[in-house]
Length: 215
Image 1 (cartoon, rainbow, N blue to C red):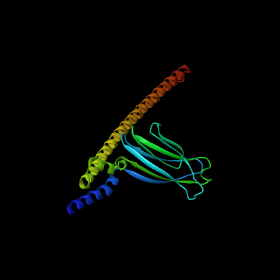
Image 2 (cartoon, rainbow, N blue to C red; image 1 turned 180 degrees about the vertical axis):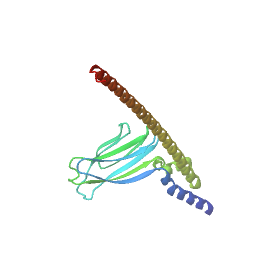
Image 3 (cartoon, rainbow, N blue to C red; image 1 turned 30 degrees about the vertical axis):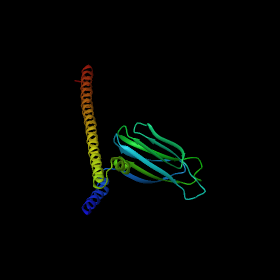
Image 4 (tube, rainbow, N blue to C red; image 1 turned 90 degrees about the horizontal axis):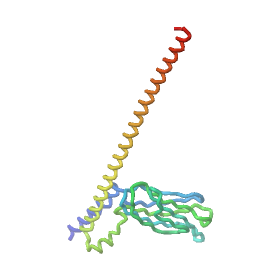
């Protein structure tokens, strides 16, 4: 029993301290929204990743109940969540494409009493967004087996993240090579035009001097 407890504790420690260093899994953010304008948070996420977020408007004065407008958009501008006059809420979605996902918060009307608004945003992605308690109850697993499932999910997430980074690097390399190729062709074309213009100028000057019998 002690051995199983020690193993579970070790796996939990590894999961808690090593995984967040390797992959972005969750983030708590405290936002101060100005009286006018909006404030946005963004994160670059690959496709087929679960995103779960909770937000709560914080008010120092009990007589004032500020509300905000919340809008979450995908890299291609699709609206994934939109809420008006909200004091708290939650949004969840599974990413369909890789790129930067944006969540914007804007103060509504004069509900804020002409003061800045504070919002607590708990943003979770990937394995951090999974409900491990529900998974454990559903699959009837606990202890070491549950921690191993968490580590397995973490390893899969790390592998997918590395593949995503490798694909991005390949795409950037292709773009860089295409740009270099275009620059090289542009340089060659510019040099050819300069040589052609210089030759035409020499030919014109030669004919001009011959007509004037200067040479």
